[in-house]
Image (tube, rainbow, N blue to C red; front, side, top):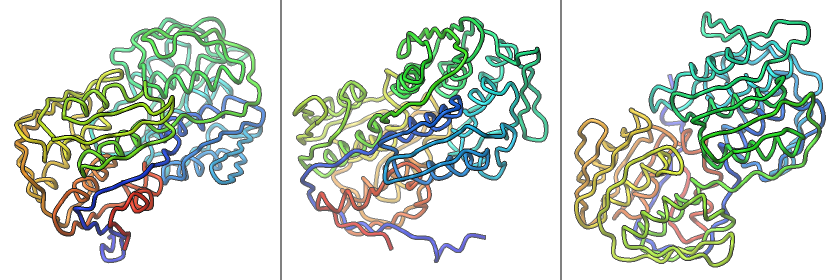
Amino acid sequence: MVNEQAQPVLEIWGGNSLKGEVTISGAKNSALVLMAGSLLCPEDCRLRNVPDLVDINKMSQILTALGVKLTKNGHTLDIDARDINPTKAPYDIVSKLRASFFAIGALLARFGNVRIPLPGGCAIGARPVDLHVRGLQAMGAQVIIESGIVHANVTGSDRRLQGANIYLDYPSVGATETLLMAATLAKGETVIENAAQEPEIVDLANFCIAMGAKISGAGTNKIIISGVERLHSVDYRVIPDRIEAGTFLVAGAITQSEISIFPVIPEHLIPVIAKLKAIGCQVIAEDSDRLRLIPGALKATDIETLPYPGFPTDMQAQFMALLSVSEGYSVISETVFENRLRHVAELQRMGADIRLKGHHAMINGVPFLSGAPVMATDLRASAALVLAGLAAQGKTIVRGLHHLDRGYENIESKLVKLGANIKRV
């Protein structure tokens, strides 16, 4: 049993206005998949701007167990995947980190044989791996799942996957990433239709292209990959984290504070910026990679989460905290993950007026929230509770910080620098 007394908590005294600039870390979801993508390359790879997060450390442990040599220096990660065993992924770590499963595409493409446990991660709903498996089978892999382990291999003298035309029933980010990696070393051309269009997919494609892969169409719903025999070493910088950037913009809005964020890629934040403007804030581009939020009177709006370029499910909880104190009646519809409204009960504890009906949350804005002890239920829920605590009257105690530390690098020290009264105890 976990000893709750020994677990750290965040104590937040709300009501402080914030001011200054936040440095946005490298994108968690990009860095994780680029680490998996490095397995394609039998030469040294260097990744820059890698955030220091629990999930990154877990992925590092998985790569090390496979035989990869890792050297970390600040936010730079040197990766040597020359001598690895594609069947050594450890069950206890893979089962806790969903992104680690994406290594199946890279390992199968390079070695023709892989053994990897089924994935885990946040308990936010069904994220089956059948799209990954069907795509790999279309490319000639034999796949057997037994006792929670996926065994995949390619027969034939050269053990290479074959190019294929693959249509995804749903634009799954994970399946698109797995199959894109698998196709880089396959014989012939692979076409992925109804592909996910997230910026992290584009980052993975650019990373592979920098290693010598031939890929076009990343960022659209049709990606074409012409397989090559081998990839070469690369020195690559991870994109900034659009979800961390969005979270800090909401922090400015909910505390009625003017703050800047840097570095960012503004195009990655179009749906988030549009909703902040609808709620009453201004978001101004100060230069190509810096945004400033100017707060305004908060008013209700409706949000529906959708695959990119729609409104991101990873920003839904943070906006629910914001709409809880926005005047009027808002509806949030969560269409991506069915279990992603468990933070509602915790926001209600703080005085939010929210009713749930299926995957819809009806929010009637209240003048203020009140500090309370709350429990994070997943990564983005934890960020929403921190934001609610910043705006609330009195003291909020947030438990379940292992969720927060999976995806936000030094969030409390960044907030303290802006003037928040927050500390980890």
